[in-house]
Image (cartoon, rainbow, N blue to C red; front, side):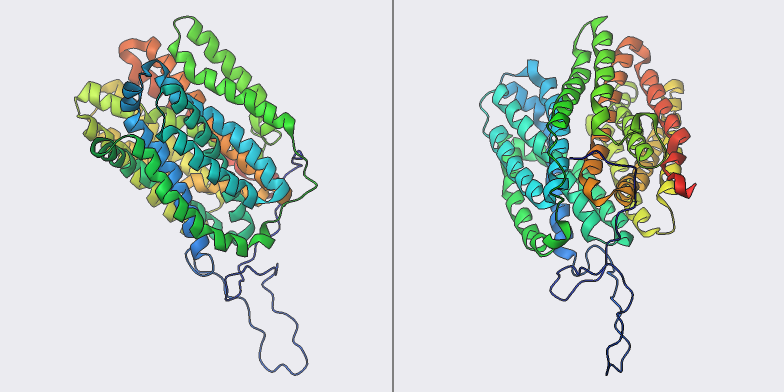
Length: 491
């Protein structure tokens, strides 16, 4: 993969398609010149009404289904992991079972990005889907914790990798006016499993076996992939790769080093003082250094345009996900909520995330920069309110409302990160930049979770206030940098 050059706008995607659903190669909606003998005005292409209109319908449904199943697996495992660790006698590897897929995903995204830029998204998408199924088989049939973690590595590697070619397909096949709505669908496909996934996984584990939480996904994965195959093949001429893009073994090496550092950050909290602090900050520094070749130049200094967009996703992911794991804990410990009632706060944020994603997809006059600025401000306000609840022991309903607003903030701006990056990417770098955007999210979440865990452990009784102070501060940093999403040419 070649190093991306300064961001340049990608060639515009077209909205005109023929009756069979095959995407037209026309690059302009202007009417063709009339031929001798023509008496009628040339017919202008009719723009698509939405991602579920023809000829996008089955392609959209297939992509949404793949993301839904990957998200269901990711969410469901949180419910059944205690049971898995108990039955496989693997309590000592409990944390590793969560950290390994996150680290493996970084490697998978880099490989998928390089492969997609070179050969187009179809080969990497098919391979990722097959590997995901293999990983589910390994985890679902595991008889000890070590084999289970191998399965987690394989479907962590492929589950993250499958996202990259899907993003590139959106950039190549869908017209620009529809992309925000497609990414809103991706957000909904990811959020809905967070609402129903843990409950369904618990029911399956109790009624049958935890093994079927993994094996059952395979039963749904095959028809979802088959549904997508025909429409993907029909647009294969639009998604060709660039053979001049070189394989980059060095980036795979950097990705492996970044993954190891992310793993170190995630596991540092298992160490005693003072080594947990030493390992955590050394791993963060190593992750930042190793990730530089995997991100657009200027990302770590939030250079205006695409680098700032990638960096902003890292920051807001850290602020949101660093808060998410402590909010139910706050309700249980301080307000004596039941676990199910405490978890309802996450459901509220999931619903508002999906609703805000739907809304932003229909607000075409709201620019990507405006969406990120407004979303960052709302997220910061929401987290400051959550901090106030923790510090002053305010009624828990206030925290519920604030967290629901935080979910809405994320839903409103998250799809626009992807839209902005695709708009600023040369075609030959769409895979690289899509992978970079997803890598930034993983790193932001991993680093924030590690820092908040360390701070919470040091704060003792004040752990909740300390955690939310950290995440609120991160969100305020996002507000300060949000306007830099706007490219310099638009300033």
